[in-house]
Length: 196
Length: 133
Image (cartoon, rainbow over all chains, first blue to last red; front, side):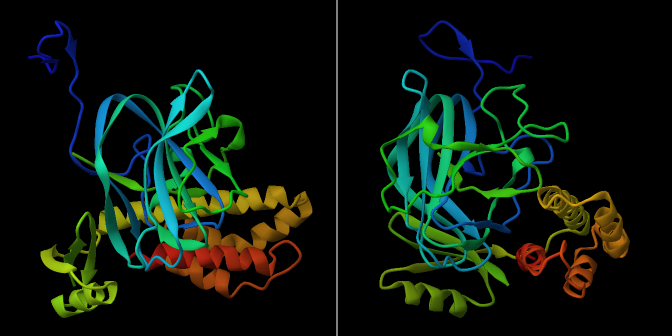
């Protein structure tokens, strides 16, 4: 039995690994954590990385909190551009509403993420508690085998701890603007995605 | 508690509320045109899943505590004092007893190494964690 699905017309075979539904991207390994007890700081750019091996069709970007959102928070997807060593914005939503729970904001149209490296960016104007996210050591990294942390697991996220909040995230952001945060025991917030 | 979905246009939120009226009140507070839909009952976290989560949280709390010691350049002598001071708390942390860790940290006297700032930080982290259940 083969798990490969023949794609019409192309002549080749590719694995169909697409899924539908709500997913929390950027996690890695069996111990991936997604408890909603992460606090995000004000004017702090959080950039959590994730891979797309085949394709991913994103219909919504969401935020899950255990308490009512008390600040303006926006979330966006960026794709890494090798030629310019920068990140280009694919889509963004927000600010999210002042309620608790799992809220989702529809994109203007479904975004088809092709194969590549992506960043789930989050930015807020205040210190917001109880957001879903990951422990640093359980995050994906840019390349397999790229050891970023300890405890025999990978993981780090990109950040800028003095990035002034803006409702509209920049169209591009140079790689050099962001630093690597690799320390275990810390957690970073993450938006979830609805795939269609 | 049951889960309800409040939505309007391309926006929606799924959250647990005690009654449909409570969900409707939140919907009304958002403005006109928000609809409420019942989804499914709330099921508390199974004990086995909760234990795994608690142990994971405590493990990361210990790591964070140790990192803070290194950042503060704690000497070997200070480290021994800390170990004596936190022995009971550490025992509870190693078995995922979050509420006991919370109790002991709240009652811990601050000093030059275990500062009020650090104490507040850990209490806040634990409160955020417990708040989700």
